[in-house]
Length: 53
Image (cartoon, rainbow, N blue to C red):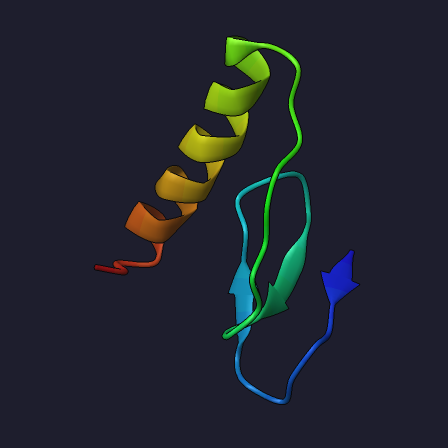
């Protein structure tokens, strides 16, 4: 699913198949530490795969 909020480049979020455009603020809702960690780790993993700093 793509969340389009600007005309900037597309960014893979590392959470499911979600993408958005650069410059979009995102947040995750979670109930447990595992859910929080899944969100954060997926995002960080995707940034490493893309060589983001």
